[in-house]
Amino acid sequence: MEKYPIYLCQPDENKSCGACCGLYNWEEHSRNTLAALLKRNTSLFFSLGENPDIGLYRKLQRKTIEQQKLCDTIYNCEFLGFINKEQTRVGCMLHPSLHQGHDMRDCSFYGTEMCAGHFCLSYSYLSYVEQTAVVATLNDWYLYGLVITDIDFVKEFFTIVQNRLGDCLKPERFAESEIKNAFEKYCALKAGWQFSSAKNRLGKYYFSRAEYHLARIEYEKNWKIKPSHFDKIFLSLASEFASEAEITAAERIIEEKLNAFVTAYQARKP
Image (cartoon, rainbow, N blue to C red; front, side, top):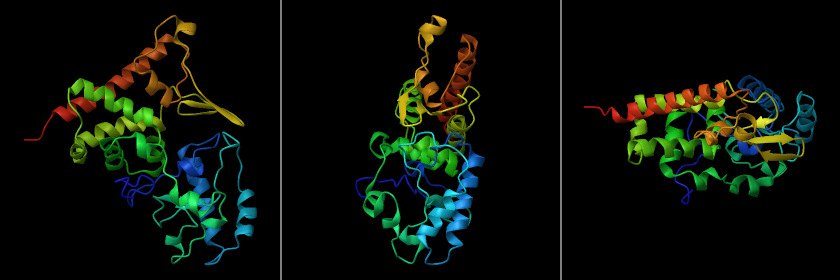
């Protein structure tokens, strides 16, 4: 991990990310649905004892799947589950840390080398302060995974607020509760956005079984207006608008979150 100072996959005991393992690659990917899936996987896997029959687990696990994938060509790893008793961390149930050092990941679709050596784009494209902000602020596996993997959503926030502040954000400031609370309220939009498309979307991508494409909001075509200055954020939130009035309402919500953060950041402690 010398190349990457923050281990985004498993940053601490409070949360982790399973996006690369296909966690969100389901048509229905709400918190409750994914939590239920992870609990079923975890319960089934560890019910098979210290040396589980992997073939049997796969057979039984497939019978528990009740929904369609967003994209058929993206693999949903069946060995993804909760890896701590508190069920706050998502991870690989084949990992050696769960089996007295015995690495079982060769039984997985990608194998040990790929699983151990893969680092998503967020490691390279998010700056140190951007990574620090997300890790320091979020303590929830579901929201953390949605946010840390959405590069546009994070970088647009930082670009806008830094321009308004006229200065770069300092990573140590995210230890302050008021700043963390303001940033968390912005991040929470990823899990509860009232203008989110109802189907076949995850962030800025829309899916059609074997393919996925970048979504677009047709401002000019539908309403004869220029693209919103929050367009990248809207796309990250899987937005789908029925009217110009909805766009205006959405802009007010984003503006409120940004202003709240700027106000909190400028209110330095004595």
